[in-house]
Amino acid sequence: MQRIWESVPMNSIFIVLPILTLLMFDLGLTLKPKDFKLIAQRPKPVIVGLVGQIILLPLIAWAIIHLPFANNLSPLFIIGIMLVACSPGGSSSNVFSMLAKGDVALSVTLTACSSIITLFTLPLIMAWVMKSVQFSDVSIHLPIGKLLMQNLVLMVVPIAIGFIVNIFKEQAAAKIHNVLKRIAMPALVLLVTIFFIQHKQTIIAEFASLGLSMTALILATTGSGALLAWLLKLTTKERRTLVIEIGMQNAAQAITIACSPLIFNNEIIAIPAIIYALMMNLILLAYVGITKIKS
Image (cartoon, rainbow, N blue to C red; front, side, top):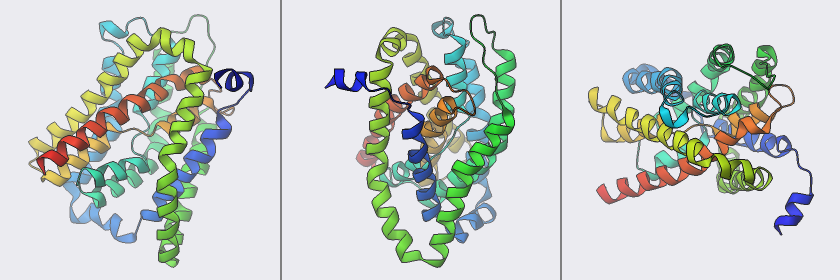
């Protein structure tokens, strides 16, 4: 079976594009106008969550890649790690918040807001990263205009369509959402499996430093979410949601940008997101298990 997979040339972008689009459309199906009122009704957890997602995450990632165990990471992996850190949220975080008995309304609000805000913050932060990383034997550039347009088409438009469907056809939106939420995780598993088979030698060779870096990123960001919630005396449900929302990144978005012919067109940059997706699910599933024991 493995030889059959390896003998078939695949461009992963044709797999990740529909996955990301469906995930964003599914997020839109869960949105209601009242979700945006949450910003005015309970601004503190929303602001804390967005600060954690938009500002704290990239800072933590930048600090981690300068730790001793990450010193030998290639520039392409550094770009990939920062790309993951700049891609917060995703509809999967809403599911994890529900499983952890967190504040699902807060989770949906944060995911929607961060998806829109990162349209502008991601290009700015990644442009700074590209200037800061020293390249030797590779030539990589970031077309900011194309990145902005791609994110607009693949993220904002599907969210907006799902949102409109939910407003005018609420029952139909609920039925579609029930179908999409069942296929989202298997689709991501398929994507990760294909990437692993295609790049298994690189992943295995770099897993020690890269795996440790991604695990450190997850633990540091989830811990930061818990710390912020504790310092600001948020409720248990809000704390659980911030742990997940600040710790869980949109791996599909990071992979899409890395593989897109319009942006980086480099699957090596996507490898950190693949490893992140594996470690993220393991760690957050363990967290969900702990919350169920405490509940």
